[in-house]
Amino acid sequence: TEVRNTKARKALPDTVPQSDAALNSARAAVLGRAITDRPDLLMVATEDFLHQQYRRPVMPRTLALVDELRVAGVPAVVSGAGPTVLALTDRATAADLAAQSRRGWRIEAVEADREGVQILPL
Image 1 (tube, rainbow, N blue to C red):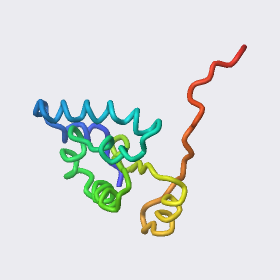
Image 2 (image 1 turned 135 degrees about the vertical axis):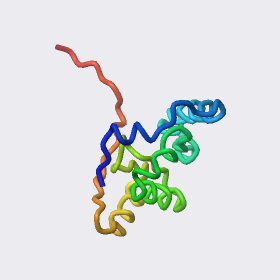
Image 3 (image 1 turned 135 degrees about the horizontal axis):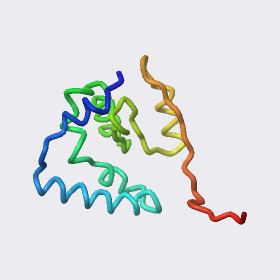
């Protein structure tokens, strides 16, 4: 179910607790390391304190899927204003998720770029 950006933004509070802001900043810092060479940190790095819980009323199905994936040990987050969910997995887990995909959801496997930015000669 699509959610308009304006509706998703309106679900966010004007202010957030300082502790939540600090936790989210720390998670963002860990994410770089988790993606680079510590996938065991992905669950911690993808825990959101600023957006997802506030948006639960406007995107319940999307966040229910995120919850299910996280309970199953799959690092998952809402991507954008929804309904997209980003699940960070290996190929085997992605294949298992695809086999279990339920009606109304589509899985698109995307390979990570392992080379990063490259400067090419003109």
